[in-house]
Length: 153
Image (tube, rainbow, N blue to C red; front, side, top):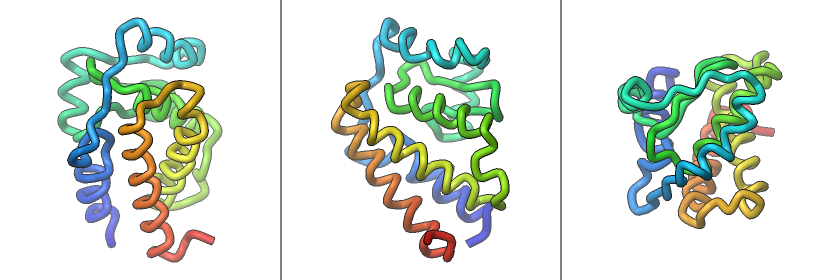
């Protein structure tokens, strides 16, 4: 599978949070959102939300996304999982996690790490059951991709 094929299926398609049928996510309240973005603010990350973010995320077919180490995009109706995951990805990017790997392996391994993180902190942050189920499915799909491509040991 080429990177373009992988992106079409797993980024533009089924693996994005909120796009797996019958597994909806629950948007956080504005108060909870403000609590959850405190770590991003402390890191000096630029948070983009509103029309510009919605357009970008529509194009990406995503609920949230990050750009490098300093920018995150969130939908107005973002879930707790998406906020926590993008915060984790910013930390991964700042540490250079898996930077020694070629794409798409780097992204797959970072996604696996992020999904495992979400499952570890699910109780602490009160991640809803539906989001836990989505995360578990996504984790299995990324692990399968890595294994099928001979990189999982």
